[in-house]
Length: 588
Image 1 (cartoon, rainbow, N blue to C red):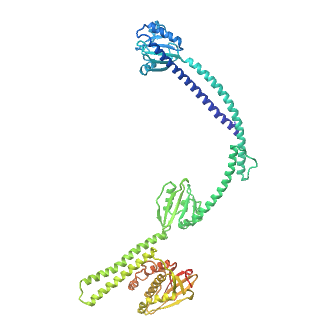
Image 2: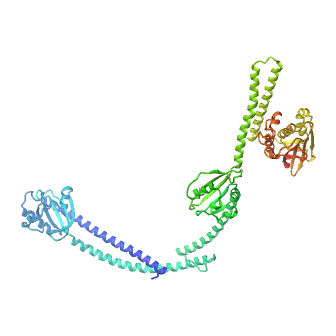
Image 3: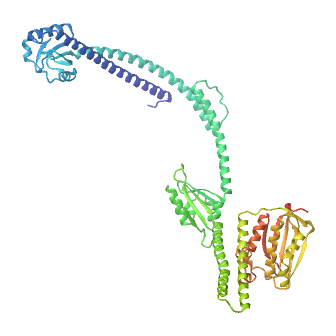
C-alpha cells in the first residue's frame, strides 16, 4: 500500500509517540514495583529490629515453648511470619509452626539472609518457600539473645503482586488514553504540516522551472513559512554565488594565463582539466590537450610518472628535465595531489634555463678569474726568482723589474675592475645626476686617450646633435663607459684609422655611438660580447693589456643610468657600440 507524505508523517509521529508512551509506561511500572519492594523490605527490616529488641527482654535461658509462644504472639501482630534461629542454625520459634513441629524444620544456618545477618547485622533474600509453597521475601537481623541469635521475618510476595497489579492497571488505562490523544494530535499536525510542505514543493517546482520571482501567495509566520522565505533567499543567494564563481573562475584563468610557471591540472580519472599558456609552450602541447588523458598530452615519461605518483596520493620529488632532445631549455617539474578533491593532481613547471645559464656564467667567471690572476702571478714569481739570483747586467735587472711592474699593474687593473663590477652588481654606486655638456664630455674622453691614439696614429671625430647638446645624467659614470668603449675601439682598430663618436636624438632616446674601422665582431659573438672575460680575440686582448671586464663594466654602468648598450657591425666594416639613455632625463 502506497502512503502519501501525510500518512507517513502521521505514522511516524504516532509511532514515535506510542513508542515513547509504552517505554514511559513500562519504566514507570518497573520503577513503582521496585519502589514497592524496596519500601516493604525496609519496613520488614525495621520490624525485625523491633522484634529483636523485644526478644532481649526475655532471660537468656527460657524454654523452647516460651520462645515459640513469643514468636506466635508477635506473628499475630505482624503481617509477616516470625522465625527465631539459634546460633547453631536450628529453629527455636516460628509463628506458623507449633512447638512439636520445630524439630522437623531444616537447619537455617546456611540460609543466605541468616549468613548475611550474622556477618553484617542485616540480611535479605527472595526465594520460594517449600514450607508455605509460595515466593517469599526474607529479612533477618542479628539478635543479642543467647538462644535466639537471629530474628527472621518472611512476607509472601503475593501481597506485593496484588499491589503492583493495581498500579499496572492504572498505568495501562493511562497509556490507552494517551495513545488516543497522541493519534489525534498526530493526525492534526501531520495534516497541517503536509499542507505547508505542499507550498514549499510548489516553490521548489517554480525555482526548478527558472522562475525566481516572488511567490504569488503569502507564507504564514510559522516555522514552515520561515523555511519557505529562507528558501527564496537561498535561491537568490545561490544565483549570486554562481555569478561570483563564474567571475572567480575567469579570474583564476587570467592568473594562470599570466603566470610564467606552467600549470597542468589533472582530474582523478586522469583527464587534463586545465592548462595555462606557459605549460603549453614548455611541453609543446596544443589547446586540444584539455579533456584528453595526461599520458596522451604529456609525452615526457618522467613527467608522466610524476603525475601518476601524485594521482596515487604520493608526494613525488621534483625533477629537472629538458623538454626536447635538441632543446637548450631546462625545466623543473613538480606534481602534488590536489587536497580535498579526490585523487586529482596538479603539475607545476618552472623554467630554470636562465638560472642554469647564470650558474654556468658564474663557473666560467671563477675559472677566468683564476686564470687571469695565475698568469701574471706566475710571471711575477718567475722574474722575482730571477732577480733573487742577482743578475750582473743592470739592463737585465731593469728588464726583470719592468716585467714584474707590468704584470703587477695588470693584476691591479684586474682587481680594480672586479671591485668595480662587484660594486655595480650590489647597486652600491649612487647616480649623481646633473647637467652634462656632451661635447665637453666626449672631448675629455678623447683627451684622456690621446697618448694611445698618438701611438697608433689614430684620430677621433666628434659629432653632437644640437638637440642633445646638454643632457641630465651622471657625468663620471657616462664618461667611464664611453672611455672603455673608445679604448676598446683603439685596441681593435688598425693603425692610422678613424674612430667616430656620435651623439644624437633618436626615437625618444639619446643615442651615443662609438664606431671603429676594425675587423668587426663575429655575429655569433655579438650577444656574448658584454659577458665577463669574454674575448673575441683572446691573444690580442691580452697583448693590449685588457682585463676582459671593460665591456661588462660598460653594460652595468649604462643600466645603472637607466639605459642600454649593444654592439653591431657596420656595413662598410668595423663595429659600432651604441648607448641609449631616456630622452625624458635629458635637458635641451
